[in-house]
Length: 290
Ligand code: SAM
Ligand code: SF4
Image 1 (cartoon, rainbow, N blue to C red):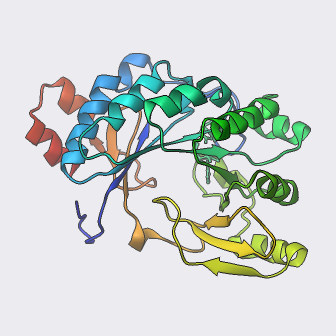
Image 2: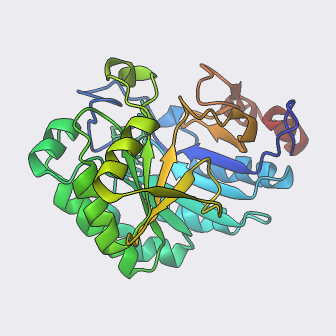
């Protein structure tokens, strides 16, 4: 499907829940008020939206949250979504805490890739940043995903204690691509000093030598990659603030409560849950999606 700016939209991010087992300071520090389960889309409703979206041209799905793996039954959902006609890939973005438990089953269910968010390899800093002592669980999750042969990427948000050296040593050693993500001034992210892509690149180049842009694309997202001579893992940047990629945006988003949004920055969206629970037809649902 094409949007009003003539961009081809073939990627849908689905948030399964607003709950999480970590408390990252830039996302959900402290305890948050979570929505009642009955307000979340059921898995049947998520599949119903996916079928309608696939009929409109959506080909790639990414499951996210909150933390997708804390919602019970999410492995079965992966399998159901993978079986929707027209859907080519199903990926997941996770903090990795529960990945060791689910990696094998996720692979069997058809999961095509997993992005694990990991901002530091220092145990004390991990606990300070995320409020939980789960670094080893995350690392075990990454190993389990690799063992299950699910392609893994690491997502690292820039913040003032950015542990770039340990992150790069690690991703080079385990041969996983890493993507450095500019902090967006949304929610609690607004309270963090901003570090742009250029400042991270300058530090990396000083330490490791020149970075060369890679033209191939990996995955379906807005990331641009570099190589450094001798490095095995690719190094990417997702820089929503300094390298605006709105003109190439190919995605829409479904919130856990069933609002379809064209952009992460939009406050609301179209209430698909209300429509489905009101007994809408397939064509009414498709019209509301696009
Ligand atoms: N809980 C999962 C995780 O952490 O991967 C999935 C949801 S989390 C919201 C998805 C990604 O958004 C994570 O990589 C996280 O670091 C990133 N994120 C959260 N707040 C952000 C912000 N203000 N700016 C940029 N990225 C942010
Ligand atoms: Fe949870 Fe992900 Fe937000 Fe961290 S970034 S609090 S892991 S949802």
